[in-house]
Image 1 (cartoon, rainbow, N blue to C red):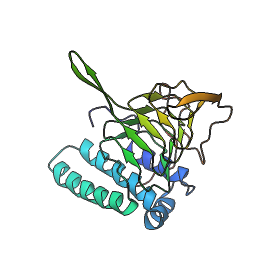
Image 2 (image 1 turned 90 degrees about the vertical axis):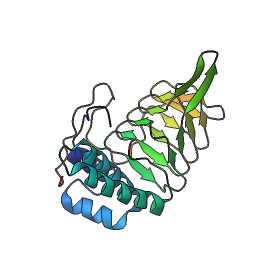
Image 3 (image 1 turned 45 degrees about the vertical axis):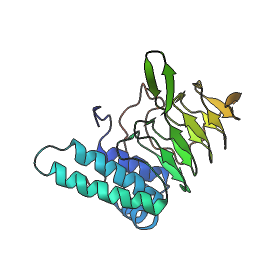
Image 4 (image 1 turned 30 degrees about the vertical axis):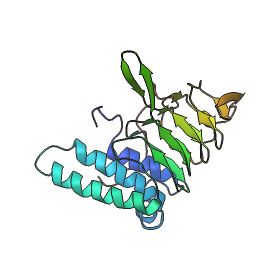
Length: 215
């Protein structure tokens, strides 16, 4: 990861655990690792990124081990969530089957992703050459089953309805539905099951104040 992380490994793992309803302490994290295949994917993603930020001679072998473990957890959960993906704290994945995320996507804090979601790139062919755009989800975004977001930004606390295809940027706190996706309503109450205690917006997010976990 090239960007300096805004959150520590402990904060992101604790926030993810809260989203799955398990609390943020060591016991809760261990229970989720033992029994929740979806939490295991986010945990190994965080572990890969933490290993990649390390210095010294242990960095490469530890990163290689974490990447191998992450590959196994993705396979077990039948999804593709590359370890390089920038993901804010408090990610929750529901069901998970068929989830596909581009490695250069950006996902904010307290985001909820259902099964079959695709976050993919969009290529524009211009006279000067190909220009590639990557998707970005703001904080508190809820993306329903089989929705597709192609190379555009979705604002904070939006709700993307099931099977929507989003190809244009969407303002914050809107409900998006259809193919192509259009704004159909405003969001009055964001849909964030078990929200982790992080900032309300990606531009003003502060460090999560969750109980520490090892790492």
